[in-house]
Image (cartoon, rainbow, N blue to C red; front, top):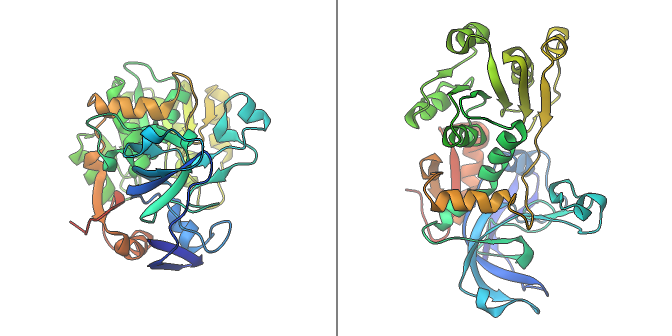
Length: 350
């Protein structure tokens, strides 16, 4: 098969690779689409994967083409989104179904080969079958959509809430889409890049602000009066971490969702804001994947199928596998505006 194989830091090669064979309990999927996550940039260029060579890519969907021993043969030909975390099923977290907190997990695209390839293997347990009417491209967006959903569920969003999202990248915009779907009274978005705010406005989010162009507190007071009921820090920046505490209303909630690129610091004033306003500060990690009605991956796919969640407008670039290396450089260097970049099987840039 063809694949993008990471041989070392910055050394991603489009080349021939052995097509994997599914082991017992696994399936082989023909990759239909795989998204580029913000975490793929440092993974490829600065931090690396857990071993070399590795095929990156964890936001993926595909079609089952063959099966390993013990797998139902009727799965062949069916399409699925793939939960990329492979839990140990033995640790304390796994015992209670908290697989995102597994102490000894494997992970497609960083600890084992992922979706930047024509084919990938995955345990059948990790497949979420795609309902009728949902495309492979949309299904490749389930992972970030579930992560965004989980953040707002952690906050316990209620109808009429004012939700402030710091960071208007793919995850921040997915949080905004969920907030709109779930009846938020006001959705406010900030970012330090005007292009991202302009893209957010094209999706119908008119309340946007660039903190570099004016005081965030004054802008927020003008729109909400008392501060936001829920603040979601979706950028991973220390400045936004600081701003989040001042932007939340008294007794408000702050959800930390962004993946930090460096050290996160908090001033004394921001710390006091947590104390004096008695804020609830919540961490949010990955998503809920379990055999219960709380399975956020199934909820995302059901929302896509019922047209409650439309992720298609978030996709700005569709590329072939041979264009992934250039796309990652473009995202790293920010030479062009992009929101969600997808490798789409058999597709060229369009």
